[in-house]
Length: 101
Image (cartoon, rainbow, N blue to C red; front, side, top):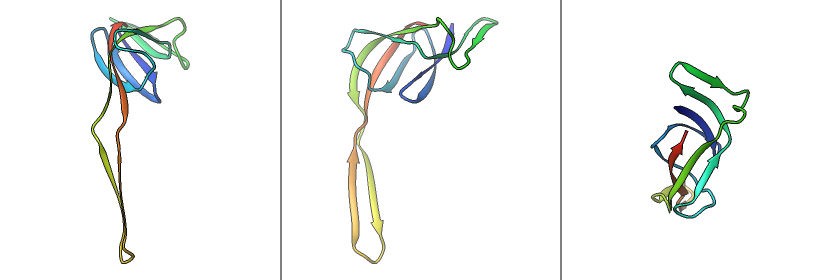
């Protein structure tokens, strides 16, 4: 079974056994997370399309780890005015393995 879930303002196409990195969610490694914003489910030729979500559909996942991605550097520069700024940022994420879709 495959499903489209929404979390952190993004949509993910998932099925059982998939590992995805999502915006940081509360929970420690090994805990179970339930995604209740399921937009679409499909199993074989049968599918359900939500308006906006599928009622009663839940996708479960197990938290594998909490982490931070690589640093992204942002440079600001204005010509002829000696204005330069260098800013670095790291985005936090949660890695989840889908156990029930």
